[in-house]
Length: 221
Image (cartoon, rainbow, N blue to C red; front, side, top):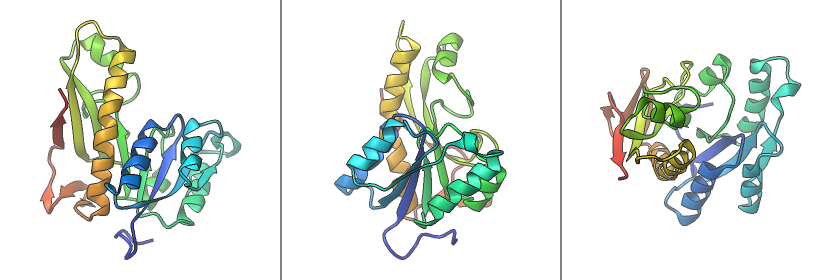
């Protein structure tokens, strides 16, 4: 598969494990024409993922394989890739896909996988980010879109959205506000990619021909 965009309308594959709120943001942007790409497939490792229903309602093909049926991570990822490759995706979007990708998968689609992490990376990689932010007493929080590499949550950062942490709010309340930010910045970063403005070169993110040593930051206060 080529590392460049196809000559036809760009195709996106979206991988989910749960409710698919970010998936819905992509469906809405593609439907409005704001994101000039086709969502060719929505894949889940969980058959009960509500996001599959969202995709079906939108007329998007869905696929599901349960990871527990495979001997190890790479065998599962190879089976996933077979499903994805049938649609020849230009971009793979991880939207709440709760699986650590194997090195094989990352290398196969190098430079064409985006993820969003609910923290201002490099702060708070991993899980429970909202509670960790509250426990630390941070005044700012947010989410970061980044290219996927073998380093967990460590790939080149592209776009971050920031909000102020409100006094006395809970982790659940903070999570809801961060998710609202994600729904705005994630499709924007994907739009940059399908328009050819965003690229992964030499291990770095490049936007409009300029290397991004730091992500573009949007404030949503």
